[in-house]
Length: 213
Image (cartoon, rainbow, N blue to C red; front, side, top):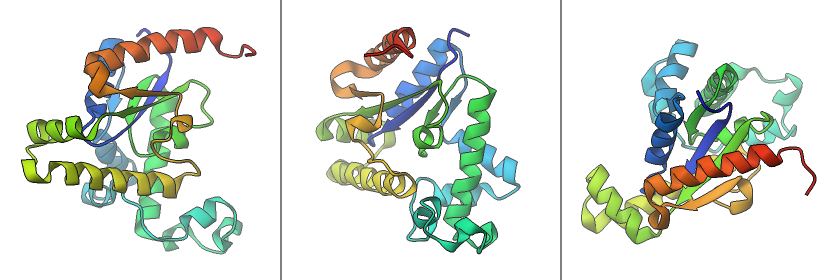
């Protein structure tokens, strides 16, 4: 194992962010978690995988944001966790799973607000993968077998869903460069190029850690 870093990958739909994360994990010899988080969270909680699948990276209109900001009665124990909306309960369960996996050692975690959930973990590096909409649409057609006349719309709707989820469960802005340690255009760099940039960046990041700028 050549790293102690936990890498979190945010990504636009069709940008190849999942493949970047998977390739990075393979190169570094560390665990990779994307959809795997659904099965692990279900196992940890004893709940059905279908519940986590249906709620995966989807925000609901509920009290959670007010709760975490301390503006809701639950913050003072007035409301039990089981009385929270289901998606918020599942988010808390998955957050606990993400923290446990990160505590076990270096890994790559894709999506699901992992960068925000692990924001207090010193050895976490956050990356966002993006690309031009035409390139993302082409990948959606080729990899996900999306119909050509719907590809761009599918990409944009998926992005909106992910943004709503991230913006709802965090106090940050999805896709904004200052939210992440590193932002990469996979359309210009390619999958391997993104992975190489992340590995090179980590070396500099570790070398300069704790140094005054």
